[in-house]
Amino acid sequence: MKSDNAIVLRDVSFTYNRGPVLHGVNLCIKKGDFAAIVGPNGGGKTTLLKLFLGLLKPDTGTVEVLGTSPGKSRLKVGYMPQHATLDMHFPVTVMDVVLMGRLGSNFWGWYSSDDRKRAEKALKEVNLGEYTRNHFSQLSGGQKQRVLIARALCSDPELLLLDEPTSNIDEESEQALFSILKELNTRMTILIVSHDIGFTSQVVKSVICVNRRVNIHPTSAVNGALIKDIYGGDFKMIRHDHRCSEGGHFHE
Amino acid sequence: MNDVLNLFANPDLVFLRNALLVGVLASVSFGVIGTYVVTRRISYLAGAISHSAFGGIGAALYMNKALGFSSVQPIHGAIVSALGAAVITGLVSLYAKEREDTVIGAIWAVGMAAGLLFIDITPGYFEISSFLFGDILLISSQDIAMVVILDLVILLITSLFFNKLLAVCFDQEYAGLRGVNSSGFYILLLCLTALTIVLLVRIVGIVMVIALLTLPSAIAGKFTSSMGTMMLVSILFCMFFNVAGLGVSYYAGVSSGPTIIVIAGLTYLTVISIQRIKTLVQNG
Image (cartoon, rainbow over all chains, first blue to last red; front, side, top):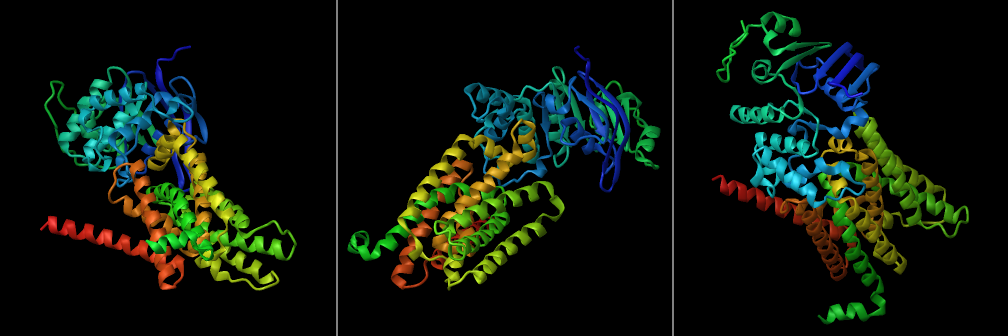
């Protein structure tokens, strides 16, 4: 049976040694969605992402990704980690990094000319077509982030998971990044982890709020009362439009 | 020039010729594996592996002298215990994240201690320093054959799985998500490191071998931007250090191991100093 859901979580709980992180989570993300996972630090955003990837196993409940277990769907999922976790002095070129997205295809891990073509195409898609031979460490933060997106793209994913794509990059790169993602969303489901709820609400279709519990909202419902509910305290809301949109803002 | 010809013709200098051959041949493995060790930042693990090889050397001497297994040589013990230590340190660093440095430090010291205890209970007298600091007089033509075989094994494995090893070293988690057995390749890499270390223990000894593994690659890393060229440049530096060190030690009448390491260390310091001065000058 072909499912319309990209990700389904049923009654999922997860506990680290220091205590419960996620409790009784039910979640359903439709195919074609562009969702943002938001919430306070330590609230379980990264844990949720790692459950989707099968890097962590839930204590109770089930995780279903693209209609099967995370372990089996893995090759159809593109993942972009935070570039800050990588060793910046590592001797690799941009092409070397992007090609890693094609690794799943054979036993020895050798790349075919088709793999190279796909990697070049993915780099063009993130507007880094001329950088194939550059040393990865010479790029700016925003460019590195885009190289890692290209790496995720060249495995032809049905689902793209991005961990904090807007951290450590300037606002201009952020805008460029989101217009690329918006374009990609026409052919794949996208899920991003973000700390910047105000900005993400401009581009994404739904917001998943994580703070031990998990709630999903359409973007239009994100308002002051909801944010207070997620972060568990009073916040002074500051309106910070990054660009004008016809739909307007729901911040109060 | 006559001196060099003399070196290869003179039967009294066979030991020096063997040492040169082993040094040059082993540089291939050292350059390749050293590059992985430096870029993956596991020199501390490699240190623990090399020191624990001493435990195996002690155990092999004990088996040879006290238990009468005449075919068991120190090098065999070194290989077995270095491989064992590679698997243990690998598993520890993969699965026991929080206490990794403590456990690896313990393996480092316990390996040495076990070796000393074995030597204590073995009848007869042994020059421990030849294992710790190297002794080119111990090199035989069998060793040369072994170095060649290990070079071939290491070149074969690393070229067959080049892309996978690169991905595992650069971003282990992501490689795993692409269906690469990350943990397996990581342990494989540590086992290759163990074998490589054992190769040059006779020339530079257990204590200093780690410097010869990492310094050539650390220097090469300053000039290169891809893994392949970094390996090639490391190999050349490693060969140079071995040949220069053996030459200087022969003419100056000093120990070869420390000479090789001092030359490598001074070269590294010179390179990073020049780079530092260059950036200072460029920034005004």
